[in-house]
Length: 404
Image (cartoon, rainbow, N blue to C red; front, side, top):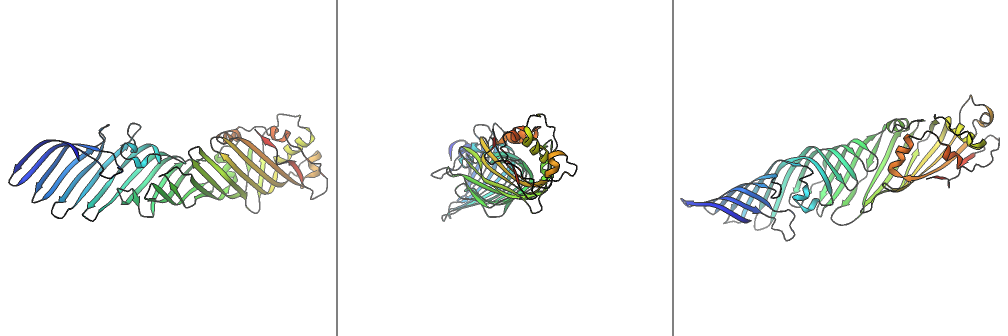
């Protein structure tokens, strides 16, 4: 304590003090920044100290906690009860005003946290516990914005910001590159500014996104790795969810999306989505605006109008805020029984599409939504001759083809 000033009295063997003071973390490397109390009360009687205070952030005046302290001078033991009626974080008051431990971990925190804590000390050492909750908290993390966090956090070491396993929170929305909502995360806070993610689950397009167990180290500059398993995503719901005009699809997909976040940003490394056995259908229902595609270009466009695929693989690699590469391999047959001309002659014959699209990741979804004409992809194709022999595969587009 420092900066104390106020009134005092001594009556009937009781020393009473009242006034203001500053409370600071006594650790060699302080975890918490000093707080100010302007109406503290302290009494000393029979070698016992009792004190109460309301602690505020000295810069903003934000009410942080109400403290009640008891200490026995004979035994050197004591304790403090902390009551946090509600700290509301706003653009003008963020967690880093209270502690250095949140710097680089979270930012742009918006919401209210409330709870209670307990600190006990003796000549042996110090222990601390606490339970705090929020009903609606938004923040920005290293892996993207998170909104609508709701849950209780029970600390086994309040001063060290560590918990037991099995902490849980619901999340309205999280956006590590693809927006998902309505999920739940199980986690544990570890000493040294580390977070152990036990599991995360989000419903997604008829299936699930499952976040694998991982440890995120915020105590040093280290990559944060998040790996999402994709299970049972419905292609039709996916297309509808993202409002992809002129595209209709069916089928179910599984896969894995490994993501890495560091000081340079976020990226996907070797992500893959694969259609389940049985395949599905893919139909481009837009209008062809360029009639000068040539025979093979027109054939490719017509094949895409009603394609029954046996397998589709999607490969994802690149920066979320920079250059990104998506590769598609689609194997299937056109099933248009009303086809005429050349397409009628090869209806039922296998097609294989190999398509690569390179561009800005966050612009790709917008591109797909407004993709009214596939002529650029088709015009870049270098098709091989097609034999009119059942079972022959027509390679409509080579793997090296890219759209920039």
